[in-house]
Length: 190
Image (cartoon, helix red, strand yellow):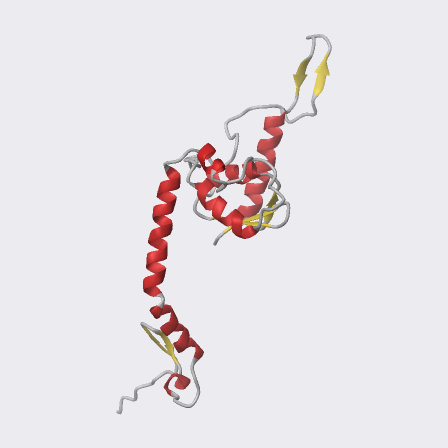
């Protein structure tokens, strides 16, 4: 009885899959060349990440007003400025993230509030008592709908910076945003 060894063509190693073309000296291998370029730039990448980390630590010791004066974040929590680009927004998003405290143990905005879902009406007998949902309760419903959508793997849309900051409280590490000329696309990184 002879034992025959079976070899597969694609071996997994530390550097990735080995292909027969990796050993060819006649044609360049793009994967191999990219790995060398990444290795050559590794030191620069590490230095850049350290610089960014120091910069963020410095920003964390500043107030929002100081950051606004330095024009690192926009002057408002509302609508974006007309000159905002996605590249500027991503930098601002990273800075604003430093000032958000993640919610712990809460899965939606206004979770413990109790209020009426019925249509509001003005009560003449009590001299103006309003029965129904308030603006804050409607806002909580809006944010909770967005949370439900992005948790289901969908992309949703925000129109104000403060909406993104509220979403960030619930998904601090995995919320992703993209500025799209007047609004933001928001989703969760999976």
